Image (cartoon, rainbow, N blue to C red; front, side, top):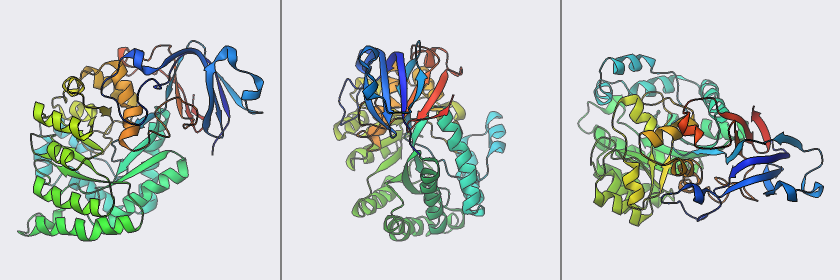
Length: 421
């Protein structure tokens, strides 16, 4: 459902309207955030219909019967865009939390059959309704924390049936909640348990992804992107290249898990294929950063995963200095990072990845939307864009970083309706 709403006289509106609108931005300062003081915003039928100085607001600009939200003394932002999640999964991996805190390494847990493979077992066991219920609860919490658009990957099926079911559930989440959902087929997330001990297992699985999963997903219209986990312990650059060529032949644009565990070739592959986004990127040299910049690849940083796994943080400052556009996302998943609040992860991107507050806000709004191909519909406060907005209990967006983790989100507007207050 959509609604009509007047958001009245905000102390500051961070419109994100000052800067390129058709591409992501490489760096930003507060002056580039399009800060407007004392502005009001009118949302009609779920879309921003007017925005301007409150003194210029006249009765004819406001729909009859529109609800009104007093924004005096508070800051208004575009709805946040989470451009990397694994939101649809079954069960949990809380036992691994204690193992990691006791010193177990993520890669060691994965090699022993835990990690992703544990979630694969639990996801395969769930029926569609159970998967929908568990995933919707997570999405509801994300929405209350200010996220109004989200990318959702598959990858906890590793077989045709479950990969299709995950993507169908993601599409149902969009239909039942109204949240803007972009879906990504990550069938090449890990080698399934049933093939790990077979000499031909790796080759057979890559063939399965190329010949069965991707064609079926495309034929069903269930995916907007293809992703591959190209890293140590997952898929090699050669295997990844095969899958990406197949995805491109089917018309699927590329996203890529890359360079989380080392200089393992993923970043250069992302540049080679003109990926919309390369994600994680804890290990980059100057040449890899230049390749991402020259290919126009958005570098998506996932500081929550670094926090949870106790690993180093990607060098966001070096990416910005190199002219690479940066997005920030939660990586919400059952094992390495179950964080759901993008507003808190925004703060982690400042303290861990060394982004400025302005860069982190841009990374979780306009740049994230641009990496998903959504820049024409969201990520800024602008007439004609989605009426998805976040009202803070402060007049300064920097408080999201300065007081990280405090309950500073006063209200969330989704498609012109208050969904949290």
